[in-house]
Length: 165
Image (cartoon, rainbow, N blue to C red):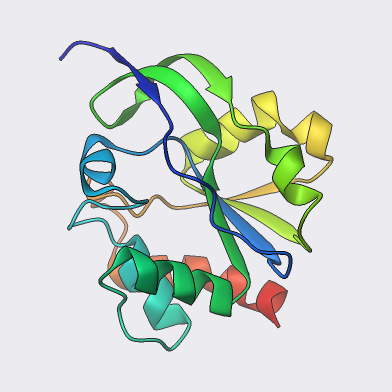
């Protein structure tokens, strides 16, 4: 598969009451096709988050945004653009970061989490010095990360809860 230049086209989801920021790397081809974050039908992000928060699984973009904002969760990606092969984070080259500080100064973000090791590594490389906030790496919810079971994902993502109270 050939590497292509991808430009991030989704706005961040947040409001001034957001307390937690969850970062991915950059939207996958399926997410770009579906027009929103974690858009691959086998990605477990929305299933994990809704179960963790005691909510019904949100099926639409609007319902997903409402779930995030209701629980004071901001969602964005570390990268504004990069070269990537399909959805393979390990193939990312020539990365350009998103301006996270601009989002952080408009919110009550208490903690930053990454949905995967690559997002955490990119944040540490490009943004941590500027934001002054550590990032907590969570397991990827991608269908490619099948070695982590759904119950293990729920346990891992439960670290978000104290920051949302």
